[in-house]
Structure formats: structure tokens, C-alpha cells
Length: 75
Image: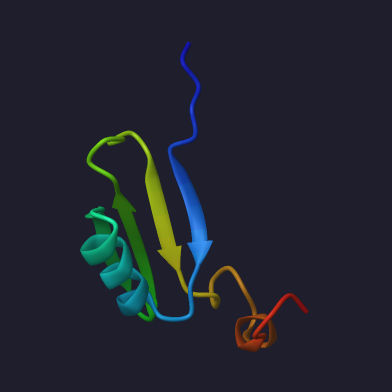
């Protein structure tokens, strides 16, 4: 059985800005972009490594409470 990391989540303040950086500057492409209300599941992948996705997520519900989402650094 082959085991590998398929998705790594990265918390960003602005998903649109992070998406532009990874796609326009680093050559990644959008793999998944799905919205559920205010929540957005956004992943990108590099063409040379299609089995790996980098998740670009904003802190907040359903994973974080409001106080954690407002925190500008590790609280």
C-alpha cells in the first residue's frame, strides 16, 4: 500500500491574493474551488506534482471560533 500526503492546509488572510500568488507567480493551477456559504474550500496543485494539493484556507468557522479567526498571530 502506498502512503503519501495528498493535501496540506495553509491559512491565509486573503484567498484571492494567495490564489493569484500561487497561480500567477509560482505556476500552480486551481484543483478545487467550492463554496458552502461563507466557507470556501480552495486547493491548488503544481503541474509537476499532481497528486499533492495545497489548501488555501481562511481561519474561521467551521474550524475556528470568531476569536481565533480574528487573531493576527498565534494567540
